[in-house]
Length: 219
Image (cartoon, rainbow, N blue to C red; front, side, top):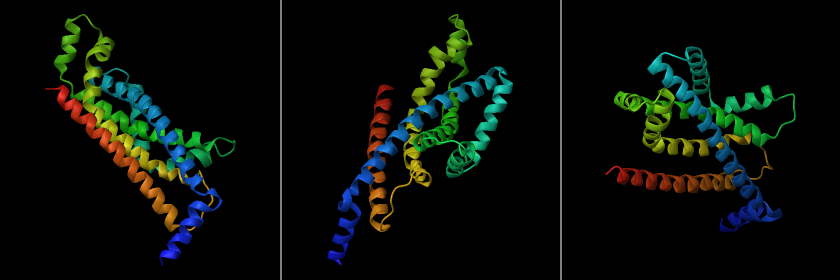
């Protein structure tokens, strides 16, 4: 049995430098996750500001309706379906980099969840903070920029960290459009699972350190 495991390990990872598929896959995963997070934060921030502005002032109703439609569609459909639609339907007739498609799909998906996280942070800030900003002569935009958003972002940083970890794991479904050679299923899948587990544990540790520092800064 030990010899069989050794043979499978050699076949899947050593022979023909097949370990490189794992390292290349890890590199692709990190690239997709990083840029999808940046795209998701940008989209989520804009959507959150539009929605919270409409809630507090009654303005931007058309944009708010469009944002609600975006949130409903993205949060109501599986990410793998969104990925396949973007690749095979929207960009089906053109030649396009698969990594770019993955970044776009995961960024759009993450943006919907980030938007609600940031919006909840904005709405959690007491209205007295808005009144304080007005008393200082700030308009609504200045009050949001200098008073409300810094507090809201600090409150939701742990939640944003968790969203990053969720996104990191979700990138595994990019294999539907980013394919490599397939070998014996057991060892490659176990190896991939262990790689994701190590990354998630590492980022979870960093997130715990961040939360601890935030709690200490509030004392």
